[in-house]
Image (cartoon, rainbow, N blue to C red; front, side, top):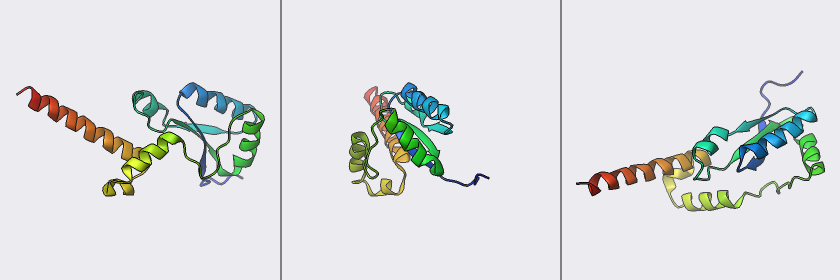
Length: 128
């Protein structure tokens, strides 16, 4: 019997939802259940890179998933390797102490809200 509390593990990120769907369909054809995360956020925030659409599987399915992905020609990053966009955001936000306590997604949303507020204030005071 499957453990209901088993951890989900991110196995891939894509900038477009269709790429994530292709991998999910491949995994499903091999009997591996997976799910997407951040799909809507990626579509809504299209001009801002929020880390992309993430594909996740159960931790126990990771070895089989990696075999399927390698056989299908997917590039498998090193375990501690982060995409360049994430390195840029985490490097930038690491200089703001209050943001360090939040996840990457929360950091991006906080920065987005702050920029929106600043732009709103600029427009407001610019029209006076």
